[in-house]
Amino acid sequence: MASDKAKGPELGQTFIAGLWKENPVFRLLLGMCPTLAVTAAVRPALTMGCCVIFVLVCSNIVVSLMRNLLKPHLRILMFTLAIATFVTIADLFLKAFQPDMSEVLGPYVPLIIVNCIIICRAEACASKNGMVVSIIDAVGMGLGFTLTLCVLAGVRELLSTGMILDTKVMPEAFVPWAAMSMPVGAFITLGLMLGLVNIITKEAS
Amino acid sequence: MDTLSILLMGFISIVIINNLVFTKFLGICPYLGVSGRIDMAFGMGLAVTFVVTLSGMLTWMIDHWVLMRMGLEVTRYVCFILVIASSVQLVEMYLRKFFPSLYESFGIFLPLITTNCAILGLCLFINLWEIDNLLEAVVLSFGAGIGFTMAICIMAGIRENLNMADVPESLKGAPITLITAGILTLAFMGFAGMIR
Image 1 (cartoon, rainbow over the protein chains, first blue to last red):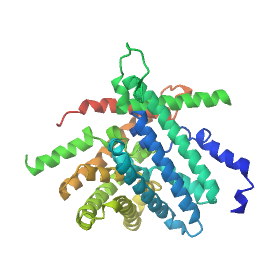
Image 2: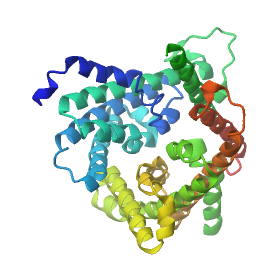
Image 3: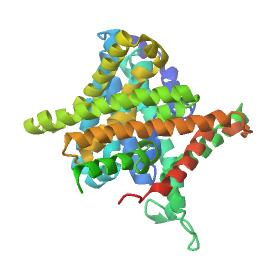
């Protein structure tokens, strides 16, 4: 792992890439199910983001440590088993210390196992790189995912209740849009946001 | 209510009212990715229906007859994902041996089913709803597969026509698909409350 140390600027690049250039939700369209399902309010979105960061970092570490031992055809199965183990840890932790959040998120915490972001990073980054690069990549991607979730959840919570994290933001006369907290709101907000990202990209280039 | 009507109610409920795609956001990745052409969408739907029925049944049996009796609920997720991955593998081997033409036409979709969240999601929901009867679990799993097939076929039909529509440049591709999906869920919300 001596080669990792020489590449300081490149590590920074890897970290930044996850935030915007290769943002998992906006650019790679990965992990759509939790993105749509847990973003009715900011608090569950934030919890979900933290769980994903934890699982992503741990599974990237394990995968990058065992990358030379893996047989190609058993690769994906081993990734999935490693991920499932860490998801179980995260789920038990939430049940013990954040029982009400665990109740709200329900089956979407165990569903992190089949979240494409995590398998994609294990396959595309951790199975080819050393531990340091893998950790940086995992943190960058995880933060990118969490930020996206929070932005989406912020918009939906603001429009569906007029509040963000229990603080009233909208004026008294604001009529809450009930549809925003339903599945419809999730799909349409994300669709419009992707369109906005496309416009910004085009302006920039 | 007798058993038959409970089963029928459960089936209709999971196909239309509690459709996994429209109300639980499960299986969104293939729903957006494979819904470009209607024949591919239908093939994917059938493959998912088969795997979800098989793994719904197997996970219920393992959960109730092995894990709960031995107090090993902690390993539930690991067991579930193992069962799903191996049943996908089983289906793949079976198809390759006995129906090579069908296997060719499924192509890359078969291995992808392992990471389809609709399947693990359904196994978890069966556990969450505390279904304590094997037949009910099988009917629910089959219904979930049919519901997924229906959703992805409707979407594919719309998208084939969408190709001819004049969509704003920045909304082309994924964004307009998501917005269409949103409007579809709005339509399906009309069924809410039909049963209980």
